[in-house]
Image (cartoon, rainbow, N blue to C red; front, side, top):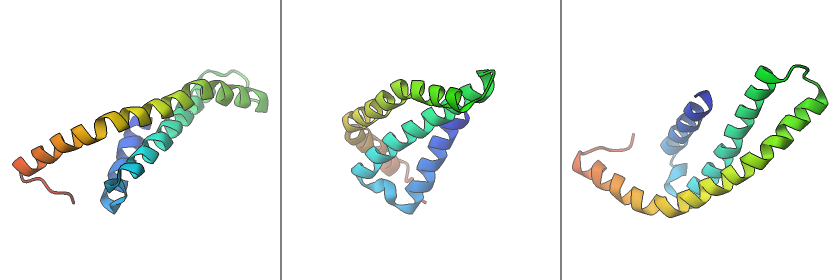
Amino acid sequence: MYAWGLAGYLAGVLGQTGLMKHKISIYIYGAVISILFGVIMDTYFLVGFVQQITPASIAAVYAAGLSFNLPHAVSTVVFLVLVLVPWGKKIGRVKMKYGLQEF
């Protein structure tokens, strides 16, 4: 839950700086935050479930995580490419209808 919360919080912070107004920035953010999410989850696994934490076990955990983290990043970007424009239009209409503005 912490990792997902961090992803949303960082998106909000970056949104306030204006960096999230460009599609390429959102795609890059999606890829980077997917990798960061995987690293956080791999670290949780390492600390919570590995009996003896050694350099070899650390390398094994993060290497095994790559088989999930890299496809996760790629699929996140593909998903964003597919839904960013249609969802952006819908969210824009809701913001206009209810007078919501960016802060």
